[in-house]
Length: 322
Image (cartoon, rainbow, N blue to C red; front, side, top):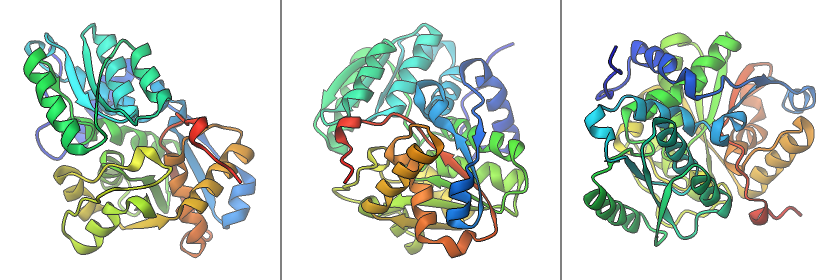
């Protein structure tokens, strides 16, 4: 039986269910944790989907695996390529390794060392560039031209979005009847996928995006109804520096209930709470959902709330706790 083909339109429920089956050999079904202290703190029932325990330490393994395993043999021969500052880079490198093909990863020179080291450990070839979107895209263009590799976008790709949606698919089966489902938002692959599968399986569940105040393009775009990239974003949540794309924005605009913001102090507070109270390591981007809940407790009071902890690849040298 041939592999399913790349998804070229907004993924259907069938697309997502097939994607989930397709990537089973390549991912973990991650656990859902609860914590009494945090429940009491926000006066709600919180259910944490722990993608920090996913392969490569992040949900990105889902989308990368789905995209790679949907490619035609002719598109696989020369390998795959992408530009990414972190978790998608590692995920694509591992997905390519599992398939026995090369991966060429364009990374900004400022990417965290932990994430560069991960790409190298999975056999990916890193090509460094200046830390701008223009530099990423122009360098990637040269890489693809020179290698013939197939470009797998970190989030502006429906196969990737379908793969990312499988985290929420599992959560909704593990913890049914959620009132809210919170997910962090950067490029929007996770949030758009989460919103899609929730609309199919649990339409009464409200999906909320969580974003840093210093990288608030999704908040601006969502509220203005116009895709508005942010310039010079600054936040400790390094996984959320990227702006939305056309594909992710169109889904988020129609399927997401709201996008909430958190400042850097509250992000660090949420990060410490999860580390100290749940005894698990997450990266700052994963702390955004809890951070926005800390700032908006009245919204979730007495509700069942799902939270996707997007990853656990923390750069300890960059964290400065007071």
